[in-house]
Image (cartoon, rainbow, N blue to C red; front, side, top):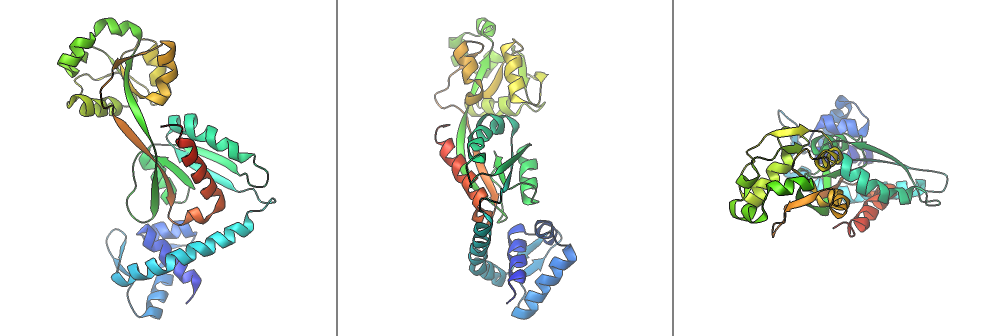
Length: 301
């Protein structure tokens, strides 16, 4: 059986689409379709059910993928290990949310870029979870950091760390909020405070309100800036309240630039995931970056 046909088959099985598999393989869609049909003729059994959007594997297709994929991944690992010598500097393409990637991931990975004989070049891009995972699936990135766990077999996600969210404001707003009143009244005690957020939908504030107060925020955003670091700067300047990851605002809290308005017994958490295309951890530079970030994350939690 032709290994090229098996490689195409496994890629389609993981991608759930001839079109997406073609992009990952650098082939045309007709070429992928032709290879799958050739393999089906050789086996005498259908491997996929064609649907309006993508394909679904048959039971035979699932069985073949389960048997073939580990061996194909092992062959990729052998081939990639042979390329990973002192004369070849591989490039790692990383994608993730701008603040977390800049503050956490990139400083950790930079330590690997200069290792003699084992380092790699690093390229980073920023985006939200949907953009990042779509880019990874399309082959634009090697490794992604996402706050959403992807579905399907094409992408494999590993929990990286949790971030705690904190309700903060500039010290002058403390005079407007009595801690006892907040404990007693909950969210209504905060209705008169302006809100600083990254989007009109108030994603961080709404998540905090739902988790802590079991309600929705009544106020709309007063200042909307699409970067959490800008949200922190505006909050410290007195623009209003905000909900931010503790890792991002901890230095400002320590300096007294901002204060925590509320300390719930169970603070809201959000999980970050390390995501790769299934099978690509066989590539040494991706595997090393993946492992290194997991080690670094042990000190972030």
